[in-house]
Structures are given as C-alpha cells and as structure tokens.
Length: 98
Image (cartoon, rainbow, N blue to C red; front, top):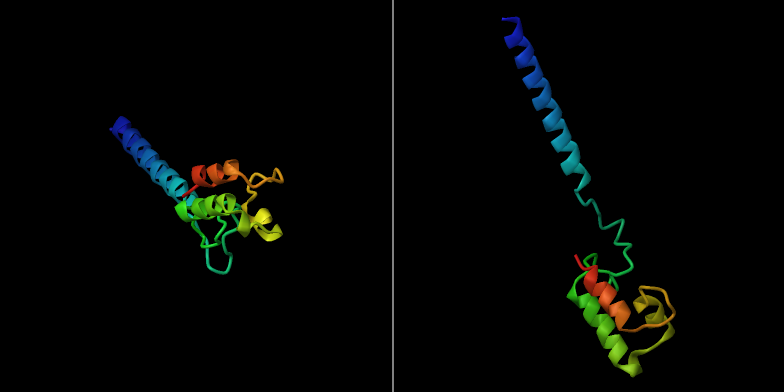
C-alpha cells in the first residue's frame, strides 16, 4: 500500500513538473510586438514589421539602379555595415527573412 502511494505521488509530481516546463517553454517562444514598439530589426528595410521577399527585393532594386542611390538609402540598405551596399546586403536580408 505504501509503495502505491509513493508511485502515485511521484507520478503527480512528474506530471506537474512536465506541464509547468511545457508552459514555460511555450511562453518564451511567443513573439510579443505591439504597434507601439515597432520593429527594430535591421533587415526590415520597409519597416512593415515583417522581413520577407519585399525587403530583399527593395535592396536588390536599390543595388541595380544607380539613379536610386542616396545617402539615406546607403544607410538603410547597408545591413552588414561595411559602408557598401551590394549583393551581400541583399543576401543577408533574404537569409534572415521570417
């Protein structure tokens, strides 16, 4: 009889620890961004809070069209901060997309 109680208590304790652990693990993965915080990620060049093909496409267009170049674009699209806007920046945006 005593062994059964120990097994039941151990089972309840393990189940409780499992559910607490799962709750903590899933709550740490939840992305909580509000519109007030904004998206502060360097790869989000169009600032829509999503890093996707549009950001990489904007960088690609900026690189391939010389008439678009300006000091602000150089700051925006130089995501690896090597003072050059080139296809490495476009590749970094593509690799880091959501």
